[in-house]
Image (cartoon, rainbow, N blue to C red; front, side):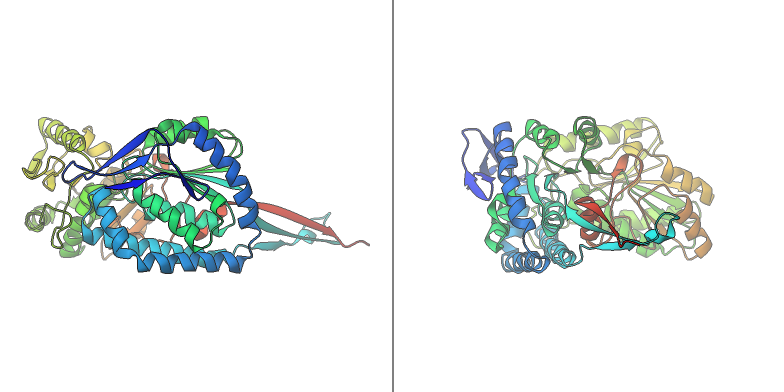
Length: 477
């Protein structure tokens, strides 16, 4: 049983209220952490003001060195972090190890960007009134960043906010999901041990009132949130005058044209639809298959999904672990039932596993009406919807018939068709002959429409975590 306090300004403090952390596979508690209050947020902000002064006085090389040291320390403790991820999230041990390695890379990319926070010369003499003047801008850290992260990648999604913010010289206050607070607390400890000024990092496990205090505080200059569309909208309404970066999820699509590689598309669908039990923002939820290859694709997909091993996430050969809670399994089963009543066809799955109430059999549903929740909302579950199309424009319209627009994958050998999707699909990323679930941690990552605002990836996040200061120098007559 792991016991941890609140990491307030890099040091642990206890509170009377506690949060129990439950292992999704068994439903048994595996840890307990102190529960933060609004007062802890206010204290964290005051500490962060001092932490910002200290960290922003570091040279770029010093920030680089500290973050590289943290990356090395995380690598040395990789298995410890991975096992805790399994216990908190329920993801398989293989998936957890991948998350830790991605977090190491995110740290390294952030460290490297610490040495590149610069500016640019502005040719003022290009303006009629600019004669004799020299101009340039520099980037300076905003001060305090509030970061709020979800349960599915508690280490790497926290890293995507915390590490670039620190690289730019800011102090950070992190609120992890109340379901998965232990790994982010371990991350905060590690960063302090690596040399980040303690006052520059706080990790505050808690509920909505903690998030509200963090996002509305006037001293906070940037709010970075990953989570549900509903909460993202609340944050935009209450944040006030500050930058807001939102990554709000999707119901990402994969398109297989008649000339596409069917076997590769099937493999990517399995990889992208059922990893982390489908609890990924860019999980493959909707698949549009050209009618000429629809039956063949569906047959191959069913065979591949039939071979997935579902069960204990600590076992090395498990492919699909539990969802975060039994209530989420029940919700998805209701969505599947609704779709079937509206005319969809259940190909496989749709039932809970006997060994754990949080385990849902990997599910494939075809011919799903666009009006059903399973098509238009974010399932966040091991469920893939497969529908046919005839014309390219029909597939593009199907992809775009969503309030979301994060990433889409298109399988085709025809460069003209690929370019049609690149031009017309409403999404933050279009991946050709790759699944929409692919993400390299240094690429610009984010969506359009109700999938969010802004981009992650250390270089691009730092643009939001810094302010431009323009300098104009009059050289005289």
